[in-house]
Length: 416
Figure 1 (cartoon, rainbow, N blue to C red):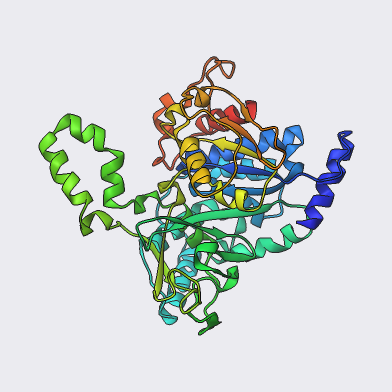
Figure 2: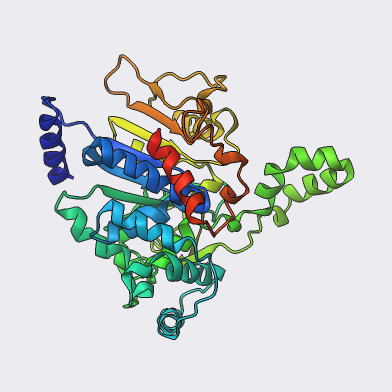
């Protein structure tokens, strides 16, 4: 981070800006499946063209945006080359692993987990499919890519620090987990482990095995697995529609919401609890940690950026159904409730998602400046009024894009 600060200072001076305190400028990318992945590539391209990408110290991501940030950070390639390769990959869809060499790599990774008695869930399969399609520029080792291998790119200060997120769902209240090229953990567990040791069995902070590092594909599966939604979350998200269609069905589901069935998940990722036996950890007595897509809490990974005292946070929001800036309001409310000082924002402002840019700032310099940029074409200035939210292919659960669809969707955030 110190090396990155020197790079940022040099860039600011090239722009004619003299600073005593080098500001910590961070980017925050929303989730949303391939839509978020593609639009994140577009946002980054815009940042690169304006020179802003060289001023960022951190970038936090969740769900689909991690599928851009992680492969790009792990590969020492230009953003334009990465984006070109990404466009070709999304034309393939998310199908079965066809290449026998890649299939063997994937099964070898599962065997490693079995040998070390690590839990295997559908997230392992999902992560393997993601790796097969989204990490093909790492051939022939797309299933052997590790998050920690991007550390040496970050350590020089040439690259920003990426922070990937998930949420712990062992208890009813969600808590955010951070995954970086260096460490994985969170303050809730009062512990962090080297990323290459995440997934190992621990007791009182001591590793009990020599299991290899989890694959990047598996981690991408954890970060972007919205299908892990709890029954009660699904009921609550669709409650209004259900109530309108059938009061009888609504009353039954409302009852389920308050039972143990409501807490059931379809397929949470499960790893050994590295904080087992660690004094102060809220889960010190638990054998496993279960994690889900952080977007199931709220779709903007602000927590790690606030914890690192960012001076400026640029939020790029590609959330679906973002009526009234709903996901930003959830994140803002969480920040206030958890003791973070934020610039003033009118929670009744229902136009924030329609503006290309909203800047929140306060006279108090200790408060972060928030720059909010949603995925919008409200002015109609881009491609004769292209409306991404009216296109069927921008669904969170679509995993196949034609070239023109990719170009339209990536072009909008770049244009903004």
